Length: 123
Length: 110
Image 1 (spheres, chains in turn blue, brown):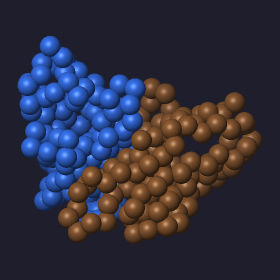
Image 2: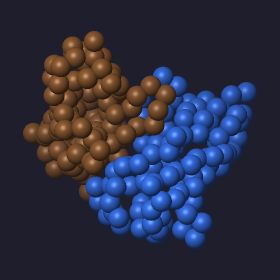
Image 3: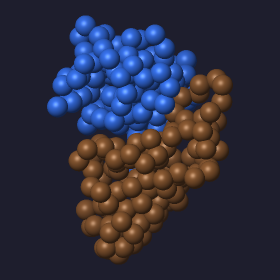
Image 4: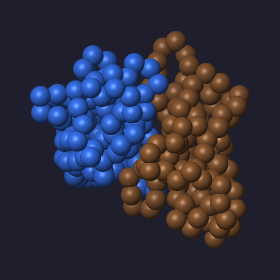
């Protein structure tokens, strides 16, 4: 069965950096795009970033563009999110999610989610 | 930036039909997806491509889309269906701007 396990969350000061990881298993990782989605405490879901199955294209929400970088290592079945210049408003649970369509080229969507990792940006 | 609009809350009694709407200008051209999130848990996909139901999702969950509005319908809502529900889609502009979630609807069944 699909398993997604996020790690790397923690407390970081404003302006700091953090790298999240997501270890995937139970499916052919190299055939699926992957998403990061976040949820601030008591708030709704916010889509953050998407990377195509082969890493050829990456997309970002305007709120993180230029500060966050999504990447993947298909040899390690692992997804990453490098977060720089962190702000208090980046405080959230960060979920990685597998896309629902192999080699998705258009209407991509998350169909399985990890349990999330909490990032707190505070001095 | 593109937005999807949902009502903040919907309330029904057990056994009644719950309808949650999602409006967006691009929905005539783009699919809507629906996620259920129970308190303290990760989201679960309940409807994809407007009206398809993933395996393991009860038949009482259905979806439809017409014009700029997509609707999630729960026929005969159960107490265990109480959760936050989010729609998800993308805009239809030529420059792909990514994807968005609606603001979420809290469904109360009591």
